[in-house]
Image (tube, rainbow, N blue to C red; front, side, top):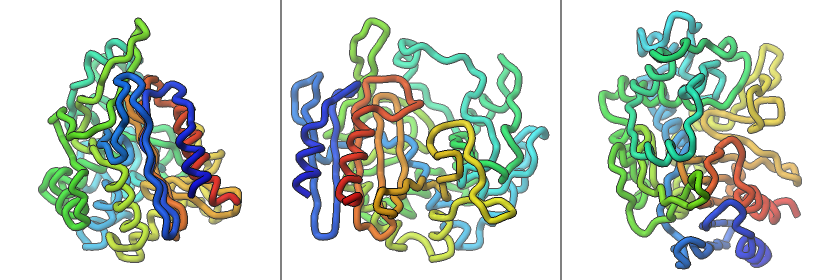
Length: 357
């Protein structure tokens, strides 16, 4: 672990104001953090941060638990469970296609003009319900309604709208809020006391990693307090490490449902479907249900999820046998979520180095 610790500790903060990292190998654990370049203070090693799309893994876990309980059928359609939610231009989309990124849905707010960084900063407290996100995207009043990208199940494309619909589905099936279901099913049983679903409460629990965005004048603005959607989550490196460990050990799902996490969608010939519309995967599907797979140089496979919110770029990854696992969060000065920050890439490279030997 010492070479990894030295590498991570000396990373340059390109486009970033600071970072926290937690890396584990059998019998070893390393925790580290940098100084916040804006405040000059050392960042606590277990600071809170906005988890971004890492929440998709929590949501997928709840969905699979409901399937295991017989309350939800992965092969049943969204149109069956949520009639009228999707316009008639969309073919039937199954729950499984929602969570393995093969729905063919447009992404959140597709076609909406990109907001400038100053507007993004000014509007950072905006909170929208699942229904508001879906309606703003699929039935906008100020632009043409978007249609499907491809026939459901035929291709894979990273998509967040599917998970907003999935969040609404959880609420419809259970009669409870997303927050209540995640808290009762995952956070409380695993004693993840530093993880929360804040809903429309922008206050950050302390201590926290400050997230910043650079405005049009080149000044870093603290955007740590922000809105979002009902599925937004705040967590810490230790809590995400514990969640990932429990999930991979099978403590949250029966074997059949857990296997969905690691199953790539395939075509009629048994080959992974093509991946389109981005660079997350190398032309073929690399996502199972919620989780992303990344091959390692030694032939092993890393599974996990990245996550971005305003001012934050995060990652949670492990090999399936948990021989290597890592969580990191970067205070991201850039407003571009299309590509990982240089620091995030280097952190992931540092994590993978021991496994690649």
